[in-house]
Length: 300
Figure 1 (spheres, rainbow, N blue to C red):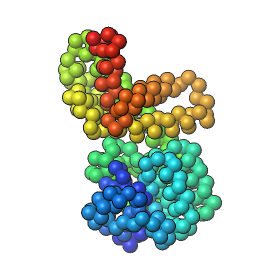
Figure 2: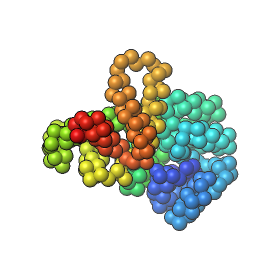
Figure 3: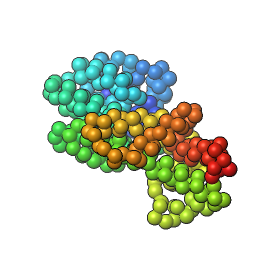
Figure 4: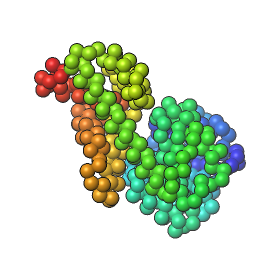
């Protein structure tokens, strides 16, 4: 792939815009598609060619990248892309749509003979996208198509080939459920420590300098201890992933092995109900502290 490769990017939201911007800056022939006037104006300001017509954009596309905000919107966009894109095109699903939907998309692509990649991303949200440090979790029927790695390197540091379509999505869901479990356990540790009179800043230093250190601790909880929940991964986005994780497990009867996933889901449902959907996921620390205070428990 080179600057003559025609790339279409559908969905230039919080994650899609920095990814598309890096592809554009790398010199690819990029067209962005988004139905939001504000998003289109933002992309235009960055020099990205935009259109409202997905049908026209994909008609001669070599690669179509999709990153939409919901499973429902993603389904509509994918079906339109598959209808109008050339049989020689490569369709790349960067969004988190869940295991079952990725399997459905892959089967539809096979029927038309189109190459399909189930390829959600992880690695630190929009800042990682801006820096080109995302990781791609790819599921495909065969090897990752030759040449796509050059395109992926515009916004990612590494591509993991996880298996057939659906494996990329499931790895993303397992990964984010593990992150949620680490975040909720870390929040509990801070809440308990504070309830026993231990300075949370000192506890953070202890956790960070020992075997309990983690990416989540450093990324999320340093600002959380200052009551700053503006960065990180948003509660509502994580909730979508946790629900998709539980939906996937419901088809496999995992038994009693998902205790941490269920616990994290319940806590983040509470965070959402309390109005913290757009806060980062470390806000569970605040919610646990308020719960303890209300019950005259550890926070009293």
